[in-house]
Length: 284
Image (cartoon, rainbow, N blue to C red; front, side, top):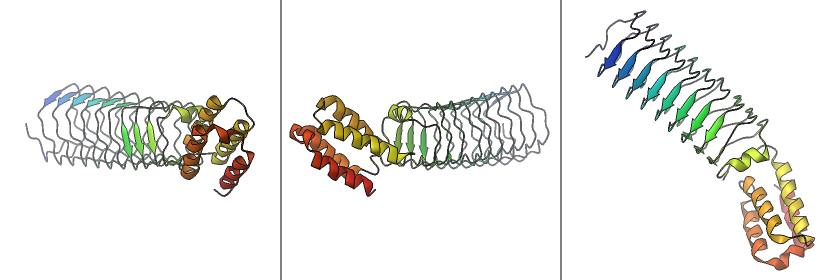
């Protein structure tokens, strides 16, 4: 069925079932789509501002370049949905479930995403500016050049995610779980609530900028000094290796030298070497 271009503003379509329906370029502002079921629905370039999808379920659906400002997506379930380049400003995603979604280039400013769940979803260049994201869960999802700046991610989860070139500056990350995720060239500068234990949950932090870098560096130097004092070598070296991994973006050269330290037990009592490394830290 092709309903492209039809004026459906304020229409009540709740509890209907849609299969292979096209709404391309359709005016659907404030449309009521509560409790609807959709399969292979095309909303490309449609205007769905203030539309309601409360408890709706859709699969294989296209929202590409659609306008969904202030849309109510509470408890919305969407599988294999494309939101590429869509405008989702002020949309409410709370308690929704999104599987295999693509949000490439989507504008998601000021969205409410409390307790929302995203599985195997892609957020390349997605902008989360001003979003409310307590308890949001991202699982097996990927982020490329996404913006989380100043966002409160308290009790959120990034599980087995690939996060590259993404901005987390000045975020709040109290109890945010990072288990198994890779963070490459991510910027956590100014983040609050982010602990060493959380950072160690990550699979890698290569090239990333971390908060409290100087404190981490100090910990690494202190462990080196303990090694040089003749304390048990292997356990302490492993601990130092973790510390260096956390700040690898600032200490790649020194990290390589630490590898030499691990492989050569004679260096563990060399205080002169420790002082040299400490001097290099001070110059960072």
